[in-house]
Amino acid sequence: MANETYRRPTVAGWLAPVMVGPWISIFLFVTAYAFLGPEWRYVPRWGIWAIGMLSGTVIGAVYVALLALVDVLLLAVKVRMFPTGKRGWLTATLSPLVFMTSYAILRPWAYWKGGPWTVVAILAVPLVVTAIGTRLLTGARVPRS
Image (cartoon, helix red, strand yellow):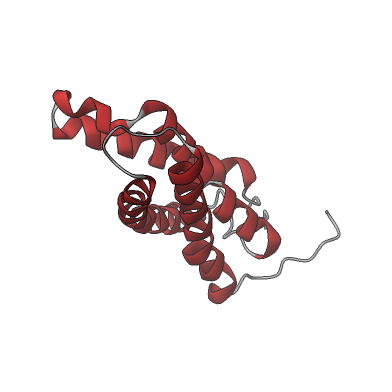
């Protein structure tokens, strides 16, 4: 790695995985959960899928924006470079599975008695932890000059 020359990543090479990768896994996870997950008493599976897709779309948009913000902040403080290529696609596609699994286990909608901010916190904490954690753990270090 010491002999490797630094190649500046392109914006398109960074933005494509960040903006497309999370949607792939979120929509696949929602579909799998709706049709293979637990049955609900009064809601048919296609209803679970529709609600999940709507929720997944909103959460996905927030996660994409959060990933881009984390990437820019980590680059600004010279900790990690923009993830591009295979690494960018892999982390952007697989990282949503972490917070989606936490949602399947924690079931944020079950905390409605704690008030809306409790539900927001249970939704937001896994998003933020996943975004920062995957970028710090899997990102390429900024080369020292």
